[in-house]
Length: 527
Image (cartoon, rainbow, N blue to C red; front, side):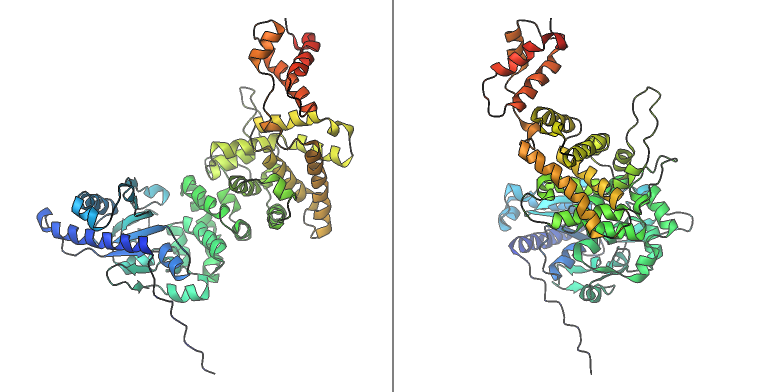
């Protein structure tokens, strides 16, 4: 039986904004070419191509708002400068129906060869789309250097230096045709990620391509070519990834993975390929320990299972309440292996050292301060959170004290933020510790049942939103009612008033809270 030939992809159809942008860029290119003789000349006319992800996504029927524009004979920055000159002419703006908001500010990311960022990229908002401009290039590596010589190149040379064949496709603005120099269309049909050139050399040239393939595999549901997968965890590649690639670039790739629809697929690949210790570490600390990642799978698979449960009032629904919280939840899941290690000794000043999971987040993928604070809070409060879980299981009377419980939750939230996510972190670590290498689903369900029992009790106490409860008593009122000036006693006194308020939900008169402070005046050291 004869195998039918593969069906061609449909021609790329541009939407209204893309058509507007295409016409604008082509007219600007002609304008720039016309100016070239006066500027000293340029042998080649400009050829513009949309490259990479936009082409791939259009062929897959996925909308994209980011467009990479590859230029044959100008740098991205030079082209954008000339483009802005073109758009400064009122007749040109009118011809293309450009409004003031259609042309944004230019931002150029400089090259940084020491961190495998080999070419400056110029970005500007045009016609409602985020457009990057960069020249076609070829990269030549000397035997004694990992920093390439970067020169203007052809479209084929540019395609060969990209991370995957499906990302090496071009859409020629002048011909309206897709250009495939590396077999990307066939790989797109086969749903496979393959490097245009020899995989090991591709990853040694720029190890960030390892994480990019992980991201695209998890996002697109494509498998990674066996030849590429075999060398993604090569010791040489991982060492360069660890010490050479800027942690900001690693953090950007990780962010895109964890904010995607299938973060668990990315973590499965990172785990299976042995990439963990090159990503989640402090590369500048020679003695940074390496946690055992054997049980990590139990934690991130648990989060995936919880997220998949769409029942209102389920564990995930109670603990993850926004898209931002979802991103933080998956970020926390990456750090659970660090909880098995003892803390670093105190600093010479006597101050506690930064927790190891926080170090791995801050220095490993440049976690922002807000996420780093959550990680620190989750680590520091884990024992107290576990104690709450045990109290719930034992039906301890102390967990019926709404004031105490509410104040504890407020403290967790004040010392880290997102207290619900701190509880989630403790839960994931607990599942990994208790279930371990056991594959018995009933073991995991038994552990989760204990945590659910705690959350149900907190809901019954109506303390889930305790951190946002507005105080009935402020410092000014308290000082007036007590007839004394504010002092060191004020903070503790305000907490006493707030705890009374939590014990008496629904009360709007502050008198009872003030009386409670007066009753404990001596204990609080109020003059």
